[in-house]
Image: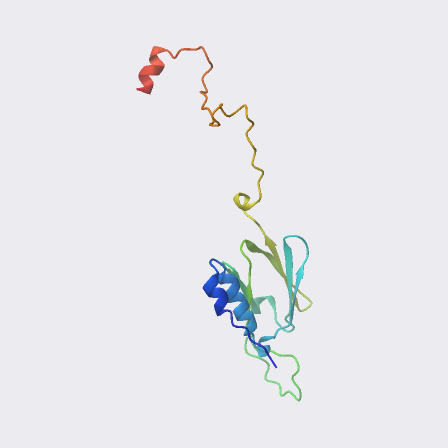
Length: 170
């Protein structure tokens, strides 16, 4: 028996989490028939991931990888098959499309097909402006007696501007 969750109350009481809630809702509806081809997802480091898919019988030309913003789509299409009469066909040759939701800033680094396994390497690259940064705290000397910062000139003290400089500034 499968239990489904109703995420409606979370949609009503949260702001900005719609992608996460949509991903949870989609994951709860996944059909077991969509489990082919089999795959593994491994975390190899702080920001490194690997997806390994078993794609026996597919050549490099039969496979396609596409990254659209936060979605990785792996597609396999076989050309016309053999004209043999099979007594048992245990190796699937049907086409497939597998979709992986990616977190923000996760990029596909590369893909390799070896011994029937498609290995896709992913890396999360957080932009510099989103990384934690240290904020310096100004000392009491930098602030005046009333607590406000004083603006200082970049010109050395005691040096008067020349007449040409004043004319150019005006």
